[in-house]
Length: 467
Image (cartoon, rainbow, N blue to C red; front, side, top):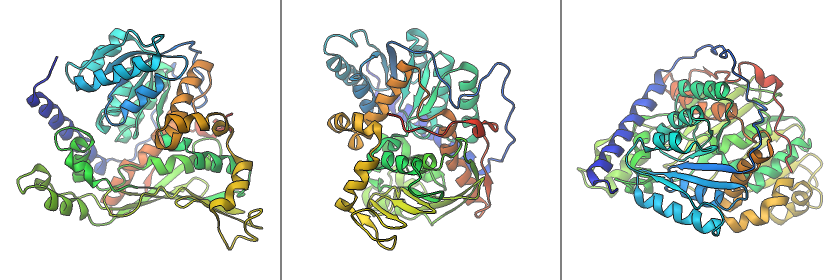
């Protein structure tokens, strides 16, 4: 069934309006006490779901990001794609064709497509009853779709962020605990080669006790504004207009939070302060690239061009988190972790250790960089990358990190292992957005993180070095 352009525009308009309302609400969000866990609900920190010999997979959203999820998961042994839902029929058909080819005639032969309207995903959940659902839709749809997927009996795997408000994040946590279903925010950067090596180094004690980290998402994306009617820019641009804070914290924060074992036994998120620069770049870009009557020129992009937030943990450690998708500057995630015996840094990759880096430096006053790190990195190469790295590079997806993440999602469900990222981590990392919005609105006033674990983080195992 082919939808009219008018119906598509109405959907995009509705999504945009919803996004403005949800995100704008963050600024007045107040700290609330952790609600009691429902009777019969269970803590999901180290949760192991029953093994699945074959993982029946469904996908909601197969556009710019979702198309990679569905095509690579279709390649992974033990997966069976049973349903695909997208607002656009052409995207759903393309995704199905990729899956059929990936199955090489043996799998993915009975894929049902859903694309009639904005609620077709609900029909898909009820009719197909998949084991897992991968959600790659506009941000404001992540939480409601994840919640409904878990209620329908599926494990939910959600693109970043997990939710936009603390209320949404609590609802996700509560639903996961009530249903006994995983809900993982798919933070792919945790599976990058550098990030995995640094995790291994931290676990081996190479830098001593971690004390400070820096994380960022610096990625100039003004060009997405040219996607006016369809595509990422058609809905994401509304968020830049309505929200002043850190809109996208998790790519940088996820890895350093796991280096520090935040919310996993050692320490937890405490409070946050946040400041934004003036917002200039988006208004200037709209003026220079669109007619005066274009809708982007009817908006005031009030979000600061760069936001800087500081997190203080329960143990007093610090994490700087920056976000900037507007300024003309090179891409960076920082990826910086500093300890009592040394420092690991990214963008560019470099290491400084007390006593020097073997074969490279004599002391910590000089960085070891480039080929100087080959011996050190070979010694601390993560076992997961040793096993999957070459295949991941061939499969592609941000240097292979996407494939390793997707492979682990299926592998954990098939083997009955805890996921590498639990629902609480996704909630804590995503909570930076509403907390930063509230702090900016209150001139940098500290905002306390909700404890989504209800104190159970103290009993949760730190992420191990998974082979």
